[in-house]
Length: 265
Image 1 (tube, one colour):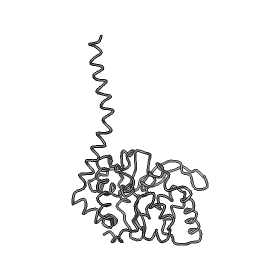
Image 2 (cartoon, helix red, strand yellow):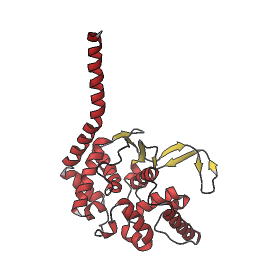
Image 3 (cartoon, helix red, strand yellow):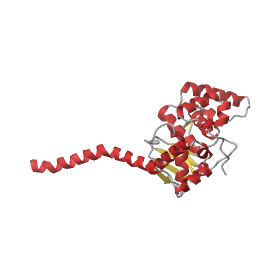
Image 4 (cartoon, one colour):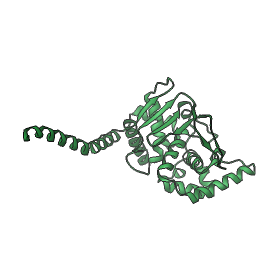
């Protein structure tokens, strides 16, 4: 009986050891990926595509490169609707997502498993509730969606779209949704007060830095505000100082203090 049990015990011990060591080994692999960093070609691409990358201090830039390299190794990118995901697509999404993690830790979005990329906007069919509590159902075209804690969906056409006239960044928007669901953001009272201000400005027909879409609810407001925080920080600090301070404390970075970036070509 002892001879029969011995192999079973050995196998069981090996399985237990693997279960205990696997997370540590995975974390070590990711940290090594971050230490390896990005290639010079990757850096050149980010300088051309992300004005904030060139504007931020060198130490933060190195941190963003480490986070980006880690993200690219850790997350699975899936092309949907016939899209073939390239290295530069993965790089663009990863670097913009990791802007939100610059002041928050060394392993970006640890619970996220995959990023699904569509060629353009995609259609979902699910219930939607407006600010008055009215629920409607039917198809809706989206440019991105934080589906759950393990997946984020993005339209590459929208990821690739940039405009000097608007603080638009679909990657920042969707990953801000992810963080809001995970952490609650910088505080509901601050977000509610600033949301009320945006709604009042819209009601009076005023032009707003923040996308009017953010007036839908607190969740969308936080995502829209996060876009402006990273895409138009100086303007946001000037027009929404309290909100800017709250986001600065939440994200742990101060992009308004970085040199004004040149417009992306």
